[in-house]
Length: 203
Image 1 (tube, rainbow, N blue to C red):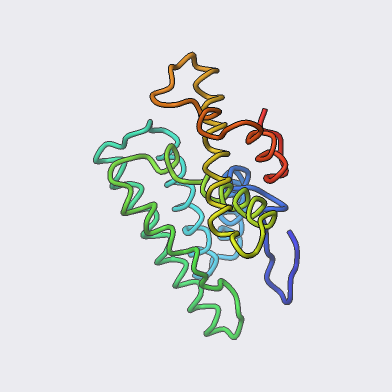
Image 2: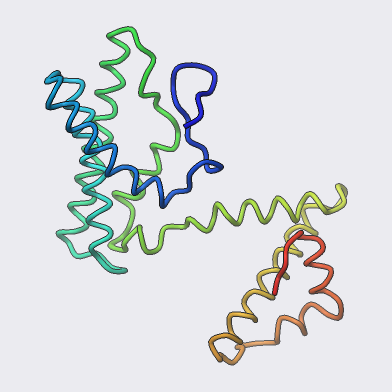
């Protein structure tokens, strides 16, 4: 953990990605349960219950496939709803005690989408973690474009990047392309130029 501008710890993606953090929740849950058994106060019990809810939602998603049954969907929604309610109670309790802990941040809003807007599809299987990776790729492409036409060129180069990746995927799976090959669409030398623009290998 990195201590930043005050008493609260902050874990960034430079220190830990989403998958290890999900595993860390189980360890934090067990540590909080042990602390709640020793301290026996309301805050400690709420803290332990909060991580139990997160762990329960993750285990339910992990135990199911791409699509969720009614019981599993309801269990995930209930667990994440209870987690958010408990977090709010932890925040209010800390403020009443004079401590600026358990900050409410915009990313909590994502839990409502994961818990209630999944449409019966398992968030663990289809949630768009790749979108965050896409933002980084777009940034690397965008900063290598001329400022006057960066918006258009950035999107054009990202489209070429996707074309190359899709063609490579088709070749690995032995699929026949549904339309013109990515190389035909890009023209001569485009793959080499795109690799230089994006700053990464496309092999």
